[in-house]
Length: 320
Image (cartoon, rainbow, N blue to C red; front, side, top):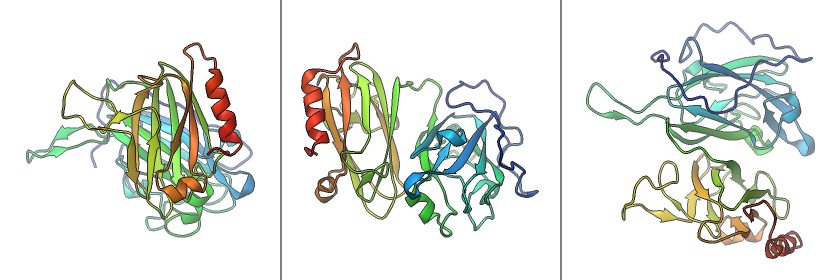
């Protein structure tokens, strides 16, 4: 693959420096296979860490590991090194969707790119811009809402790692894309959001008028839908309408299968006002089993309306 193109980049996303600790960070082996670029734009330190209740999470530091892991942001044209340190007792990896990488950064047992316990491995990924090919067809680029996950723990497909929480969001923007005030990641698996069932699912909070980005990821063995009450979005790459057009498809419910991901941006409370707005899977048996949560839209000054607080209290006590 071609090397990273020299260009001025919009600096967006999580910038992390190499971190030291009690664990060895020696490279797992000398791997002569090429990476997608020789000199990455920046490096992100990522750690795989054992959590409570049998869960395993990614974090930018060992102390901040969580489920889902940190969202990685890139801009088309960037090449980023992900330096993963495995602080668990089993092999893990970083396997990305949507971006460009070579077999050296595949993050699979097949291509011998797992990270053994107490070791570190660097994965390199590139966000390729949209461009014309020499044959006149179009390379669509990599802008979109993607995800990353383990592909090594518990077998060749990382099934145990995914079930334990080794996953996170990966957002690739084009220069000029709108930047949200808030971002929420919701991972659907089994009958859970982020490995939790109601009333323990996340309460996503924003003030009326804030631009909010949702990143929706599906894992596991079932089809799900994501439905958000009181809001709607354009079924486009960004979830925003690009122009005044009758051809823009507007939705408030989208079906997603295992490995799928999508995202959208809304303005909190636009046309509907503040309140405790439910999000849930619209497969009825899934929502009945606890696959629901609350998007709490507060007043513009950050206060919670009394009717929203009462609804939130009802939801926490069984109205879900």
